[in-house]
Length: 288
Image (cartoon, rainbow, N blue to C red; front, side):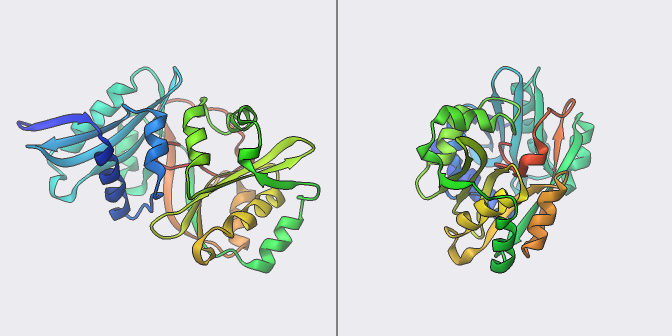
């Protein structure tokens, strides 16, 4: 491993990591890196061989007890030479003593199991243009009395408390950036002063990604989706749907969206207790 060095990612490295993820076909958000850096500025690592970037990983700390692994990429020319494993070990060392989660692509899941991870569910990306008539019908079911509002008009403390139902640790700085970055739209579903749904859409290399998508009912999810899709060029969206939420899978299938990508949500210990019935789309496969 002579000449191989692991350092924290610079701002330029963050853009490079996004480009690598794009080349892998992951369709990252155009501005995700700005929210990622806020979540944990030291949580992104790059491995270089004689100064040339060879691999990357994110090992982001949340609170005192949770962490998330993402962006685990070795450049094709450097694969099979042990550099990725070195970087993996550095990332896991950074999260030592915490419950660690990740979204593992299919061809890496056996390797993650060897490192102590166990599958909790699959996140299946559903992609396409929601069918108008079906979307209107779905949104009318269970969404009576719900108002769709700009999430920025609500007290942030209320949004953060709602997010904690679906994520195992507080992530206020990340959530503030994620919902507020220019070019993206964050909408909340409100009934009687209570939040019953939240969705964010952001521009990407191809289909606009929606995540998170939280909702009390399929009707609320459809109502949010209809409004969010108005901000997608050509109406094409992509949502990473937990397969344990069968109502979510049925909703997106019924709207004409098709599965295009799959990753297993895995943890090093017991899966945290989350409101999976209300989780229609995860926030990010890279940071949870």
